[in-house]
Image (spheres, rainbow, N blue to C red):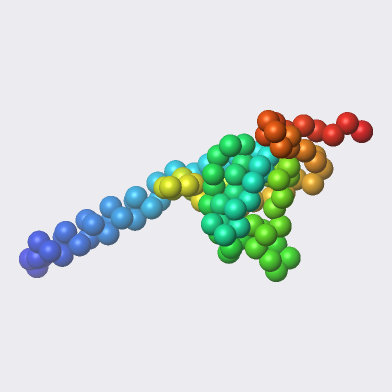
Length: 111
């Protein structure tokens, strides 16, 4: 049976697209929330901007609305442009951190 060149090209493109998505670059980070830009779905952690979609929810509400500057977060996601996209995030409630509004340096309160 003779195959048409277009058929083989379609199969090759499908394989290339599948392989490209399987090789997406990922990241895992731990950091301190410095700012939350709710209207843009952006969170600033340790000086770097990340996209945080409303689809990530906890207790029936987007996590984006629950984040506050000074919280320590563990998160992971995929590298994307213009910002990496967070796909999983956990707020660490055991270590409160204060942000100095003048220097933006984090400090742990003394007990």
